[in-house]
Image (tube, rainbow, N blue to C red):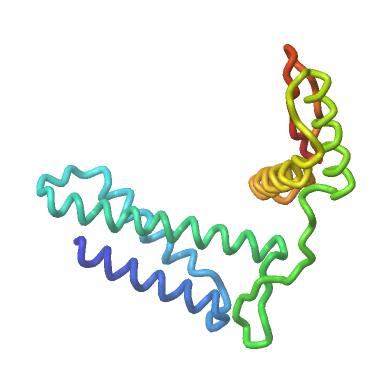
Amino acid sequence: MLDQLESAMSDLKHEYDLFFNGKRRAEPMKERKGLEMKLLALSRRAIINNTDQLRFNNISGRYWTYANLWTRTLRDLEEGRLRRDSAGALARVPGERKEPVDPVHLERVAAELLAARRSCGIAGDASEGPALRETLYARALEISSSAGGKTVEFRVTVEEGKPKIKAVLR
């Protein structure tokens, strides 16, 4: 049964490869549901042999990894991040890369933070500015990428005698 499951998994992956390369017109949903039902049925059974249990877990994990990949790829296709080229294969849509934070805003925040540090009595001078801007830009890039490309704005506040920076998504 595990051999059949592994063979069906390989066939389904091949069908999805054909679909994403433009050689198949429709998504292989019927085959996918069939394999998913077999996996769910087999997961309800008790497998006594540890080797077979491990093999089943590997097949099941591989299936769910592929299923997530296929779902993400289809979502990207539907939302316009992927498109079909002239041969029918999928290709990423080139788009302009949006900056995670406005450079003028970054300059202003760096100046505000240095001023807040001075007002709190924390040593610092203007030579820290470039390193501070780099750090803020890196953090904005990280926050923006995890938030789906939204623009990041920073706010400088003083709490309990210490300057703090808070990020806000726009």
